Length: 324
Length: 135
Ligand SMILES: Nc1nc2c(ncn2[C@@H]2O[C@H](COP(=O)(O)OP(=O)(O)O)[C@@H](O)[C@H]2O)c(=O)[nH]1
Ligand SMILES: [Mg+2]
Image 1: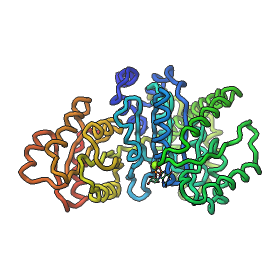
Image 2 (image 1 turned 60 degrees about the horizontal axis):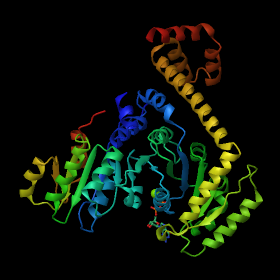
Image 3 (image 1 turned 90 degrees about the vertical axis):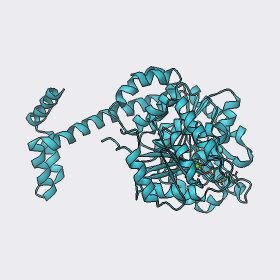
Image 4 (image 1 turned 45 degrees about the vertical axis):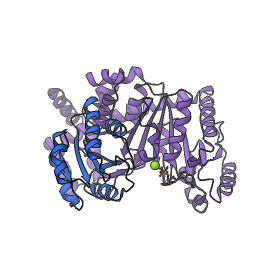
């Protein structure tokens, strides 16, 4: 595929167009993914999440500057929510990242969450891979996390940074279940404001009550992203976390898990798409569907009946073979 | 279940003027029209606008200029886009642009120029009809 070749030889434009295909979940995606597969695994993936307005984009901007100063190239995915009313979105994270626009070592892509249930767009995993294949040393993913489960970003990245602000002190109890459990590193940003130290202490106590058994205790950092304070320390903690993940074998375990999950998900998606296609065409499934819709047949018995009907499944499989 | 095509737009403020109220209102309005609008802030150089448009792979670049430098800035962005192989991006302009400048801008590749007070719906419809890159 020509686009992939051009991307691998360093074309920003081709990378951008491949990202669009992945984002649209185009039919070419499996092909693209298999072509770039041999080029994967070199990037270190950092997730940055937290409530809106906490300074995540500013932090990502400054962190990127530190990574660049050390000679590393950086890919950035900045996700913002899709409006449930119009399907449109305002993607404004770039405003904070202007210093990197003309740097060939930095590629920034804004994404709307589109059909995703949480802060991480469904297509983000594929886009991470493209940036990895493109040769970025770090891929930084910014998502809005509001405190429900944000497991997606934790699963998709290697180190998850949760960004809070001093004002979060009041709401911290309610966030316990979500943001707190996914953090490898806590950042209390806007430490120029009152209450940062208090929040840090509170977090510390909370973490002590539920120590992790992974051999890594999430550090709590205070930063002032707009004043460029605390960013070196953040970078160092990310490196330290990476070293621990590597030394303990957790990093390769995590990557193994990711590959396994992806494999299963791809199969599931394929099967689901196939079944739905058949549901539109095949007379038997349609008649089941109609009876279920009307309430004549309960959904459980109906699905059990189908899944245990070997001749029916066999017929469908041979249908598929005919279609190729 | 593939995602249907959604129009992506870059809203840019080239030049030195410091007012982006209009651009912000338009950004929100076009979001409400179902578009994904990337906003990059004030005082963008043509290089930066083109580079952002390429990385974001937008279908449309909208530029608003109040400073009077549009005859230099808009064509400079188009030139950069062409150089990078992204000549299939629709480019539209707005802001304070004298009527007599419009033919020149169009000749340089700006598809349309919308004056202050143009209804957002009209701009959205224009974009939908004229996006060059149909999926
Ligand atoms: N006072 C203060 N403001 C900050 C700091 N970091 C970021 N901000 C401001 O917080 C606002 C939101 O920042 P942004 O990076 O867009 O937050 P995001 O929504 O989490 O990505 C902006 O106006 C920033 O200038 C900080 O350390 N202190
Ligand atoms: Mg942001």
